[in-house]
Image (cartoon, rainbow, N blue to C red; front, side, top):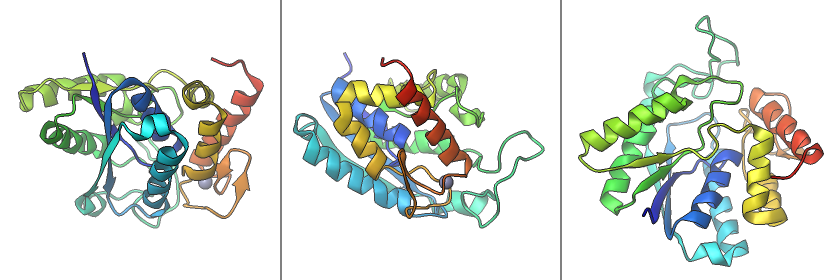
Length: 234
Ligand code: ZN
């Protein structure tokens, strides 16, 4: 039986929902994130606020929530030329992928997360990757996750499980999952404290949270929230 988990926790809506899922499911949960010199630091700041708020508002989860790990991954910013790490505008590349794609990012994240999980004795790695939404990042696909699970388990001679609670659901269902896990309190926490906007905008407050309202990440979050409000509950 799996009892311990390491959540790849960036401070966004998806990874906060994954964290709530892990806290409901496992007995001991730790979190990890990576500083790869992303253009906007607000996400790294937001994640600490989210952790504090979860501890404060969900005492039943606070006792399970252990160490937070922040790893310096400046080298990823050095080797990649993307609009998440450079001052360039968003656009679609000829590959059909948006230039927000950071090649190798999730592969590196999972490898380092596995090294930390190995050291900390954590059995499951939980990540908010998803095939359903627009971006089509190849390192978010189910096959990639399964291949990584196998490669890491073989390469470290240690059985890892990579859990992807959001893989087959859309953004509206991600909001519904959060509601099922933590009720209105968790929805309000996600709206107020998580960060998704690619432009790092914390000035403009919408019904669904803070952001510029027009970048692809804001549009996705806003559309999901609208469908969440108008649709059935899980
Ligand atoms: Zn935005």
